[in-house]
Length: 495
Ligand code: NAI
Image (cartoon, rainbow, N blue to C red; front, top):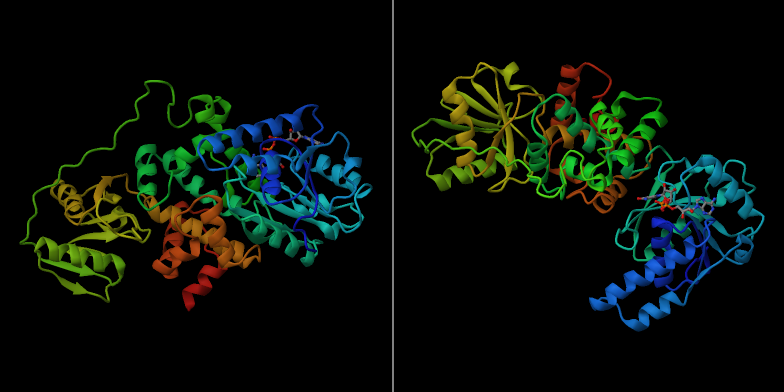
């Protein structure tokens, strides 16, 4: 059904409902707004007016456009006043029974061809449709907060959602200037599911005392993420983030992969919810000082060492050009089983998941770097019995190659490799299970949570063999059910 310019009803005038109303009216729809709480709908319109005033001041919106949009929005005090609409978007409290009974009531009010959409972020669309006379017209239209700014819409189909209904919502989202992606109704849909390891791996690292929150955040940001996992959890709020993780964990029948963290639960229990409470992983109180990253003082460059570059990829190319710039001569072993530098028999290896300790005292491992460039912060680790000379020399070479090396505890797959591998793996699993396509996954992660690239774009830089190796090593180290490589990753591995 063509929904452009059709009248719309939005139910729920909270943070999401208000945003949806604004976007719909700005796209030319007449929008009715209903909230069961007296005055809430009117308050939402007041808030939209305030937003518009500040946009007018910044010359990002004209007075005329603001007036024209506002004239299209109307509050209603009874759902019966919306019998003529062609689309209802529900953005009320996140409770299955309340959403279900609302949609049942709506079926007695609107016409048979009116599409019913839910903005639920965690409830099964199939479950919400259960009991409706026409469950095929119920679809998920999952916006991201703040709605006017976030481009992504997950168009979620339940078991009974008709493909025409999903297509209509997909097309409408494009008309609203959004980027929609199709998703199957499964726990967390696309973004809230695939993003779980971003938090989970960081929380596991901190629980194991591998490094500090500042170091972990800095390493993750240095590969292009706008925020580190601890900064982001503090921003989202630990109560919300923990609740999403717990609901995905429960919905997947307690699959160990989604196990919530006791580190985060402690914060929630203590009311240390992040920015909104003034304290989470970081302290947001006035005058609070964030500890600086550890400083490293390199040894002077020694050009007389026998250098061999091992492996053949974007990183070894970078190593080669940096060594040339430094005037250090080297040879290459392109067919080597590992990637990195041999310095007079000592090995500086890019992590493949094995710990430095398991490789020997002459080895140091460093983190994965998909786009090597100068000033990239990179984590490295060595065996416990490494010599003092090697502990100074290994990071000095990383430094001379242009990186900012930071030592962390020896642990499998360090920080970036472990996080990216698990994000890619989760994305592969979602695709394997028909939740979404590879393209949809890339779009969703870039637009829904601002990732610098999509999981399958990382895979173009990083071979699936290496990702499988990392996950296998994590599994070997942790011996649980958490680290299992996805069938799709295994399949790509064979190509
Ligand atoms: P909110 O708490 O800001 O607003 C909910 C509004 O719904 C309130 O004004 C409340 O009075 C009203 N309401 C509750 N029950 C109602 C009923 N039976 N009939 C009419 N109005 C009712 O909530 P928020 O954050 O806007 O979330 C709304 C929905 O959007 C939830 O399903 C949530 O999971 C989903 N969502 C939230 C996101 C977020 O970042 N806050 C992101 C994406 C989806």
